[in-house]
Image 1 (tube, rainbow, N blue to C red):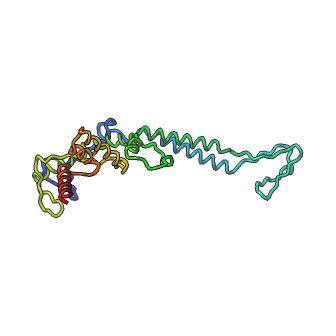
Image 2: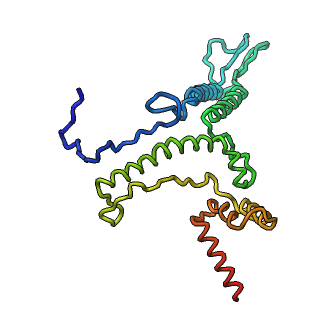
Image 3: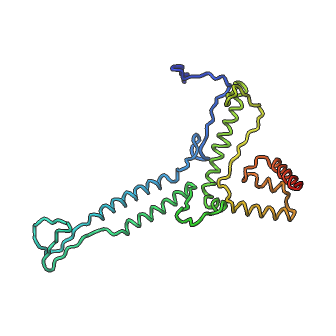
Length: 265
């Protein structure tokens, strides 16, 4: 039978009437408690990568100390053999001495295999497979968005888990708690949220549009306005999120005011 731990002040009676806890599952699937692991499909591949790199390191150490092979008949039978630049190895006629060393093809094959495993692991967990060394010039925001598309899909799913099902639920608990207990926010000693306070999350774009993207968008919107396909109000609302315009209506009113002042001048 579970008991309340009253010792050491580890129990607090908040009197809210509900448990102020939100349990967040990582991703759909997995077990019923924690959800699916983000990196589950890459764990075994990461272990294989560690093993392959360890074997490659051992191969490089072996190749740095080649084995001496002597073909009989050799000179100085029974004498100790010392491998050094100042010690010449003398063999009899018909004899031969060679150094057995591992060439670099095996290590290169391991590196290529590890690189392939890395790409497969990133693909399995919706990671970014792009190589920064292959990007020759700055790309537009749309091009970068397509480049990181798999990672953006994963972030969208995590936004649902930790945003809509996590952060938004916590905010609702704060609003509910303010009905019974006043909250302290900044310098205000007491603050109560209305019970019907509408809550929503506003996510910024993953990749900010470049100046070239904004120029292309402006030219496209201007052509649509001149063709009388959309209104200026619709055009302003279209670029409001990208340009961080909180109130498109107020922005339109400011534009009209500036236009009227320019006409008066």
